[in-house]
Image (tube, rainbow, N blue to C red):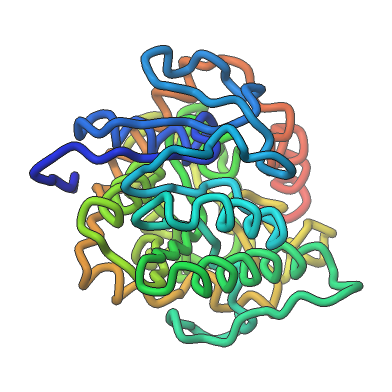
Length: 330
């Protein structure tokens, strides 16, 4: 649901031309807000020709933002606490609210369901990459909260899906069902999936600025059973198909990567609750989620229109799926 205000806001977006940032700008413009982009001009330059773009590199020089003021800043591209610290210092006193896009990866315990008060990862040397990302994001949260306190909004999305997704995690499934035939489904129909449409995250982010909504929020969708998700994919695709469920233990024994070796399937015991995160705080504060069928249909339409697949696509090739079906699909 779009947020409304009695006057247009001035919003500074750090980044703003790739997936979530793009959706944030589109949501803000649709609601009549004035947007300024600050980025290096390398990703999708000219995507928003009517929007002011300030070219700069946030890693070392934000002087182009001096002597300017905005109602809020949306930081969609902060991954390093030192770099985020530079932005915080440059914008302190120049923005009314700092909206920082973090990640559910900050949570230290992914084995049991967590809410916003769960323990966070602590950044330290020698961490494995999968933990270091979350620890850096957690450190960034501390930087923003320490500087802006009640004027900080920390948004922790889960897996973000929908049109313009640069990964192939979600689009794989409606495209796969549209192709029809025998479809390998990983795990068990009762396994959990949890994700959110990029446009719903964007509306929430803009709403943080409009409604002056501060605090820390897990912002992802409600948990859905894998079986229900795949049923929805089949319904949207509309092609005849035969589904073949392959249990996780058999996929693991066959050497399939437990971290999305099959898209959206996670069989790592350390992440047993990664798709069962508590989002009740955000829902109570007004988070709205569009129907799954709409997300799937829009994603399939976009995926079909773009033609070629991303270079960094994730998941099964057609050849690998057929091999697994031959060896594991009884």
